[in-house]
Image (tube, rainbow, N blue to C red):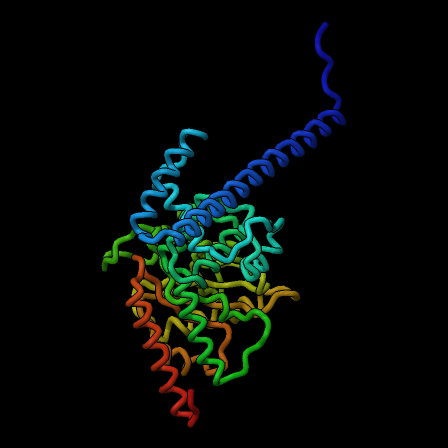
Length: 366
């Protein structure tokens, strides 16, 4: 007797059951990952505490790890090499204040988890923590852990953000903003300047720093690597359009990239320059911003933000063109290779000097 066809109601129920099972399977895997992360931390703590009891610590530690490795492999099979045990020890030393008994369910509590040192992120596995252990600065390590958990970064994405010195560049921007705060009171809510980084690192494009590079080639490369570019821009950006035509009395203009920032609730127009910024670039971006504010911006949208990405910029020129109170048009440099810490520190010193000079002209001190 042939099977009866499944009624539409039963088919829908089947899909719901599949969804339940798949969700349960995901939760089981996540639970196992969390348990193993906690177990590795506890093993690391045991090793550290035992080593601290030894008179000759270096020799004692080596012998302890070797013996423990042999015993664990005999009991549980592979997976407990001396190298892995040393990683467990480093894991504990990198996160000594954690309580692995406390797990956090849901992204909304992730920040609390890191701040209070409660436990480890349930959606980050051992491979994530292996990467995080290599971050020396505790604040940077906590930042990358929080962002990886909140944004669902893969291990590869996490490595990329660390290697591109994401936190250090953000810290540079924060330091710059602190100095600007001496000139004007800061607002509590998120502002356009809070989403701008400087520099932007586009090493994932694998483009040479050459005079042969064109703006169209840079634009095409960014579109081809849009997911990675969105990651570099930061959370909240959504792609809207490329080469969006603006027509004013028969004359056409084409801003290269248009995004929408979900948290700021505003359009973000991006223009690319493969050279040093000039005053005409700033004026053109102001035109784009004004057009979007008058013709595109919705009733619930905030003022449009313009971002000029260039190889070199003159902050004084931008300030004189747009005024000291400008909060809509920004210029930032981009790099096609990862910056060094020395380069970032030099940039921060340069920014500090420029701001000190500016405030001195107004008879203020920083």
